[in-house]
Length: 389
Image (cartoon, rainbow, N blue to C red; front, top):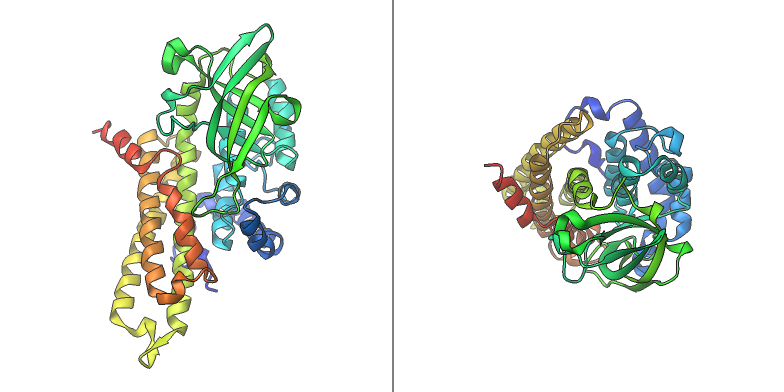
């Protein structure tokens, strides 16, 4: 197969050279040798196993951007991008380490106490603790102010009650950041983030592993909190009511990470499709020799190149601390829209075989659909962008 990382023939940006490039190569080898051979097994089981997580930790693929003093590798989002891109280029998109690494762990790093960071981050780096963040509820999706899950203080403990749904890593996670209302009367200002270590509490229940269209191997679950008691020291931040601000501060990186998956998947789809249309023949000549095929792929490669250049710029700005929420929203919505378009057009070029699950493009088509929904729907992204006009 043509190398997806080289399909656009662009020079590597400064942020992706040297140690980041080495990490990408190492991650690609690990995922190709350790995860890809078992991926069908995970797709059928609709979950990974804990052994895969501990192997990833041993290979240095967990918490790459966390400081070394907390068990990480001391990198930046560039290193996380390299890992996420490798996941998509190899085609094991259901491996939920991206969320663990660059969404869950940063909340603890940025808002946790020194004690919390030393307690949780080293275990996240080894895979002993698998992270999740419980935002969405049956009645509250993109509207985080509508969260109903409550955390009532009782002495030196919080009592958490409520339910969450669509939680990535939900079946395996044993460290969950729960978005709660510590003071429902204050709306967004009454929102707090509280960490629940599921191995150490009573009253926590996992619901069913949800039956999704795509990303089958990634466990996505309902979670129930029935008078779950945790120490008040599990609150993230110095005081209650900081949760909504914390979420808003971290969402740009979450949305950029979704863009990472999108552009990397676009590159893999193009690589697979170009290889296919060179080999597949119809009416006595290769599919690539038809002008329609050439024009379609020319359009897609052009748009993919535009997307990659924009993405690289966003990563550079983010590493320098200058990626604003509006630009992150642009990246999330435009790159995932592009992903959906590319998957559809590429599948069409495979003809009937594109509809067969044995061909990777079929899975990629299904897996792409959720990208326009989670992390804030693309419609919400457009509203956020419109506010800047």
